[in-house]
Image (tube, rainbow, N blue to C red):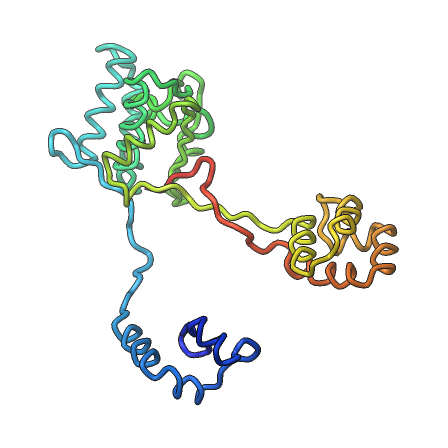
Length: 287
């Protein structure tokens, strides 16, 4: 009812004063809700928030020995090389590791690799099955040395540049496959380590498809359910409502016979594709 800063009129006031059929004018608000308007303005004046953009929000990894992330990453990678190849490591591996570490450090992703390595280690230490690695991440010797992947990129002639390239600045993308039933254990480990406000699932939006839009609008218009079912059966969910109308003569015939359905269809076209509800993304977690 309000066009003044989102004020809400008490329900009993609406009932007692027969205000259920029009929007109050500014003068009526001032007469009937002077205190509410003053309080509303007071709250507005107290609100002062600034949201800074373009921040570096990469999480920081606390190293065990207190060293910086690059030094610690280099140390863990050398340990990984020895684990895989013993004390005799071919020169090609040394050169490749040196190059990758330089690129990773230059691009500011040392903490990223340490964080991923840490929760993968947790999973493996707790008998949670982890995939051997897939995608461009298997082209990284650093990932192999940190036990994030189990594929030797040099043995299979895989390119690091497909994974991380200083000429094209973008976040590394390491796909980690975790055992489905114990995936939540790894997420909870990260939450406990970094804090519940710093590790959160991603929101996802459910949108109105063609049939759902028709059903929701028809319900609001109180159209007979059987009539709506008939229309939905004719509707191809792979197409939008406009294309359904163009391509299906039976839909045109039904809408021409039923004026209320025709009105419903026109309104539904405007609603189609809008967000209907929110839920938690099946896989995505933000740190």
